Image 1 (spheres, helix red, strand yellow):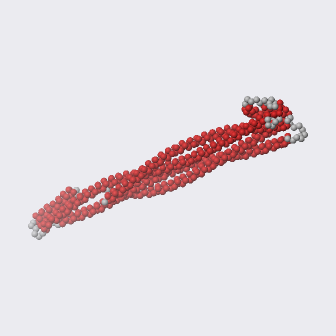
Image 2: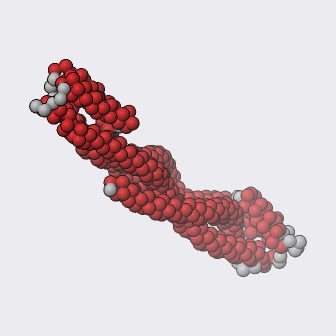
Length: 576
C-alpha cells in the first residue's frame, strides 16, 4: 500500500515537472527571440544615430564655414560702406566750402587723381583712397574714368559724388542681400539642427529602452534557465526515484514473501513436531510411567527411541529450512532426552514445553519483524523524501542568492560609472562657469572702454564740426587739415562702433551657448542622479533579500543535516 501511494505521488511530481520543463523551455526560447529582435533594433538605432550625428557634425561644420565667410564678407562690405560714406561726406563739405581744395579737385584729370588730391590734403586716408580706387576699378571694369566737366565737381548729385553714391548704394544692397542670405542660411541650419537633435534625442531614448528591454529579457531568460536546471534535476531525481522505488518495492515484496514462506515452513515444522509428540507420547507415557508396565528395561528402551526420533525430526527440519532456532531446539531436545534417561523425569513433557516455547518465541519474532519492517519502510521513505525536498530547496535558494548577488554587483558597477560621469560633468561645468565669468569680466571691462572712447570721439566730432561750421572765425582756419582730422575721427568712430557691435554679438553668442550647455548639463545631471538613486535602492534591496535568502538557506541546510543524521541511524537500524 505504501509503495502504491509513493509511486502515485512520484508519478504526479514527474508529470508536473515535465510540464514545468516545457513551460521554461518555451520561456527561454521567447527570451532568445526577444533578445534577438531587440539587439537588431539596437543595431539599427545605433546606425541611425551614427548617421544623424555625422549629419549634424557636417551641417555644423558647413554652417561654421558659412558663418566665417559671411563675417569676412560683412566686415569688408561694412568697411567699404563706411569708406564711401566718409568720402562722400568730405567731398560734399569741400564742394560747399570751395577754396584751394576745390581748385585742386577741379584740376584732377580723373577719379584716381581726385582721390590723390584728397589724400594729399589730409582729407582722406591712404587706405580709404586705395580701397575706393580698387572698388571703382572693379565696378567700372574698363570704362573710362576721365575727369568730367568743371561744373560736375560742384554738383552734389553728379561726377565723383554721384559715382561714389552709386557705389555706396550698390555696396549697401550687397550688404543687405548678404545679411538676408545669412539669416536664411542660419534659419535653415537651426531647423535642420533641431530636427537632427530631436532625432538623436528620441533615438537615444528608444535605444535606452531597447537596451533595458534586452537586460530584462536576459534576466528573465537567466532566471528561466536557472529554474530549468533545478527543475530538470528534480525531474531526473524523481524519475530515478520512481525506478528505484519500483525495484525496491519488488525486492522487499520478494524478501518478505520468502521470509514469510520460510517462517511458515518453520512454524509448520514445529507444529508437525508437536503433533508427532502428541500422537506418539501417549502410549509411551503409559508404558513408562503407568502401573501396568511390562518391563522397565523394555519401556525405557522403547521410549528413548521415540524421544531420539523427535530430536532427529527437528534436526532434519532445521537442516532443510536452515533455521538456527530449530537446530538449537534439536540440540536442547537431545540434551533433555539424555538427562531424562538418567533421572527418570517426564522427558516428553519437557520436549513439549521446549517446542511450545519455541513456537511462542518464533511467533513473537515474526510479529516483531513484521512491525519493524513496516516501521522501517515508512521511516526510510519519509526521511529520504525529506532529504530530497531539502536538497532541492537548497539548490533553489542558492540559485536565487547567486542571481541576486550578480545583479546587485552589476548595478553597483553601473552606479560607479554614473558617479564618475557626474564627477566629470561637475568638473566640466565648473570649467565652463570659470570661463564664462572671465569672458563676462573681459566684456564688461572692454565694452565700457569702447563706449567711453566712442563717447569721446563723438564729442570731439561734435566740437570740431560746430567750430568749423562758424562763418565768423577771427583767423584763417586750416580747412584742409580740419577735414582730414574730422575724417580720421569718423573712421575711428566707425571702427569703435563696429568693434562694440562685434563684441556685443560675441558676448550674446557666448551667453547663449553657455546657457544652453548649462541647461543640457542640468538635465543630464538630474537624469544620472535619478538613475543613481534608483539603482542604489534596487541594489540595497537585492542585498537585503539575498541576505535573507542566505539565512533561509542556512536554516534549510541545518534541517537537511538533521535529516541526514536521522537517516543514517535509521539505515543502521533497518538495513542489515
